[in-house]
Length: 108
Image 1: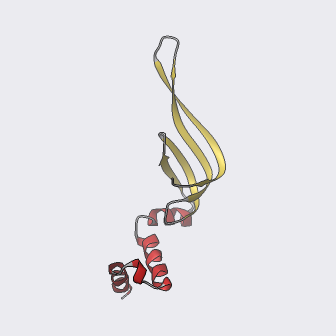
Image 2: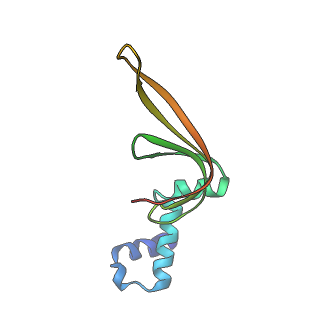
Image 3: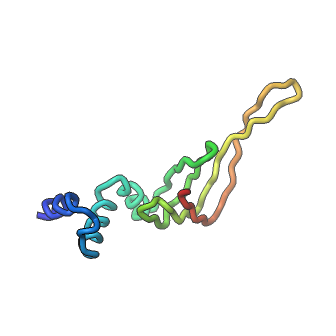
């Protein structure tokens, strides 16, 4: 019954939906769509690995998120690799990291 209602809402334009129907549709998308992974991470307090620009990664717990994937993260470990030239002209990769207690990560 509920699946039929959701399927019906998916066929309609968002402009034709009421606020209640939009809320139902968004709740379904959070629980069954791609954002369900983040929803599970919020509920179970597990760490997630997020790949961001400049080949940096964030290992963090997701406190909250929205449909645009803006997130409030806590216990964040940011990791990246720096490439330095040595005296012989060779390149040497150095893994770096830093800890951030809380951060608001906005998608640009």
